Length: 497
Image (cartoon, rainbow, N blue to C red):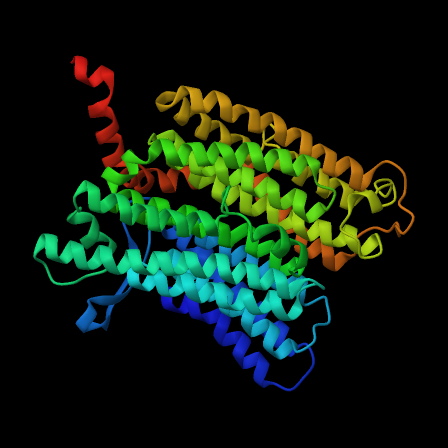
């Protein structure tokens, strides 16, 4: 079943590309993505909240111990749902535009979805690395071919950063599997369970941890490894950017929880403070930059850097509430930032194609539905009490307060700054004077068909976050169990007992 879930979007898009009729390729891609989302709903309804489900385990390369091993668990279930949901709506939005070489565009879009799904569902490290690298290739092409005027330089920078990160992770994965096999005396295996069952010595874990961390922090992105982000976010087609920021950035955060923490607990504890400092840097830097930008895409981009800083704090708090909040916030952020970029695209279309908030403004009264949707997204971005983002950030700060109080107090400044840049973006884009090139008009029905599901999902997780929390608690708790044991045994209170 999981193999069908992964490859159905790509298969449908390829079939559509073979039919020589206009727009058929986009409709087939939409159909495949929608079918995958329907399968995900069934998975959520059937998952008990404990252990693995729908396991697929087939030998892929026997001599290297590599398996085609897929499974659903509490960590990846809602990230898979976020992926299928966001890609289906982004492909729907892309169908409303005319694309040059669309018979190539939509298969690349679908390949990106299949690769991201594979990365989330993989339970074999070599398979994860393969999908991790594969998912970047279509985005290189989607940016380099269909991006804005500065797309070539943006693509080059994206390739350099992410390619170096991928090479580091590949080296780390190979070293981890070989050294674990030598350490345990067992045959070579890349299975997560086999690697976690035979942890390496602390010194070996540490340098491998740094390689994985570099790859994941580049992908998120996190300060100071975010240098590729501004150019890529400015030039990428907005429908592609919606899923790139909303979904792909979560693969790095997921990698920490699914791979790094269970397999390298000693190194995770050793570098806890370093990662927390980088996360705080991402929050403060991202928030400050979001406040100073005039390009609406970069406001949303830097706000994502800050939000991913919060997610990293929750993961490395080594507290059950923090980790639960991080997983919830991964989904919440994806549900918020994807429609935010789509709304920015609609506003830019009404401002003569400009993404500059100084060229926008004054259309709130003439486009009340669009303004209302934008306001809901803005309130969710700043973690307004009553929103799902508020629940996620509250759990993260609560878990961090229990283990690293000072970091929690400093991180609270990011909550305050979020309200500043989110409201500034909304007010400048929707109110004030009408821009000289602004065409004031309400959004169309087809735009509403894309945005309404996002708004509905945002409201759903605001009202009932337990939908996710109940199904992720067991798996998330087990993912950080080793770190909790190590930190509690080394704490001053433990030493006094």
